[in-house]
Image 1 (cartoon, each protein chain N blue to C red):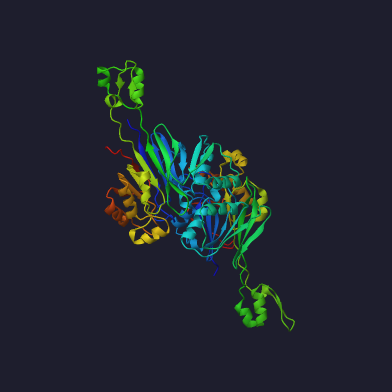
Image 2: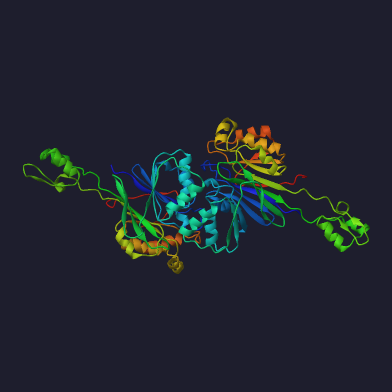
Length: 310
Length: 310
């Protein structure tokens, strides 16, 4: 049975929170693990509104230090403390976020009852930030007005499932079985080469989700997000406001769709909409013209990362 | 015609924002002027929800640096900037708030398009913070775990209304009229003493509102809030949790009522309720037993400060 892998949108607006839309934050569920990507103002209220067990979040990833992506962090960490949390939290974010956290907690004289780690992200190149038995999270560079990273969540290969009938017909040693499960061919003491390709079912496709919070149109992104199953890409503006997008280092919906297309992703999730647009139909249609398999992210909605072979 | 003087509650919860209740923030309207008292996370959303013209706020008062009283400030100031505000803002708050603001804006590389002033409050004694033609705002000390001040908004006397029939019967010089309007007796060049008490109507009662955000039960407060028309006093706990109130430097509803009673205030508004209480009926009844003229503050509700003679 493959573990659930899905993303729940807590906020889909840029700049000023209007039209009932909130600032950027998303929850990734991978099996039993919850990860938080960005944490705009009000994230703790959104987590509660959508009945997400936020106590299970132990890893928080912040893409950059514009307020709409991190201003809910101190409140969330404070509420964990008031709720007597003892479980460790690790925050991954840009240089400066640690100073912001410690400045707030120093003046409020807050002593956290849980360990808080900070791991500074590197806005150049891609870097593995954490690994779990099931998945890894890595950062990759986005081009924005501040040092900014996207995040890629990649499923890791699990143990290989062996073909029972094949094992009955051609028994092998326990050492060989162990090796095949890890995906490695094995040579028996009698010289026989036992091949994974003969004894194991094909590996199911490994799922990938990429989060591109704020970025100018950047075809170089392709190398980091190639063939992901679900790409979240900001689409702050309509094509009519393309110049404004370039000036502010943001993208249009059509540009997000172009990135999805050249990166051969399976599906595209649009978000980070400018407050100037009340309705988003035009945003969707401009993007869908370029890359049909795209959707407008909706707050409170959960989107599964569907393996490519389904 | 007397100017409107009223308070709108944007948040009435302490610690963790639950049960649909938000962190502390209130808007004072005095005539055309809007003041913001405290600014918990989500205040900008609450201002929008309750259709308050927040662009008219130019003075923001922060009582202390616990997160539930100020974590919405950076977001609000950022949104003003995104909305191209040019009008000056002055923030009154404890030592450290300026460092928190500058640390956030330094890392987000934010250049405000409007002048932002910071005036550090003094948690000892009472101090006039600002004066307007119509009212003044002063701070007074609260006893809490951090340096904390309450705020008193006091209506200032306007020009005196003179009695027309009296002026017709006993005409006086223009200089005398000017002096009487300012509430000062005047001696005419012929030696006559023209008395305010004879020529002017009695001054209408001057309205006062006091805001006590977070405080342990403190009868010394009486000297700062004596006879205010409306007292907002925190009431975090029920009497059953009185020990917890003392430990955390908070008050119970009954203690807030006791302060209202000994201070001879006209009405009491309760708020800052602990997340442990879903219903607040018991809070109200415990307080009303001590001071009947009290109400549970409700988010989005506006409470007029009613002159004592009405």
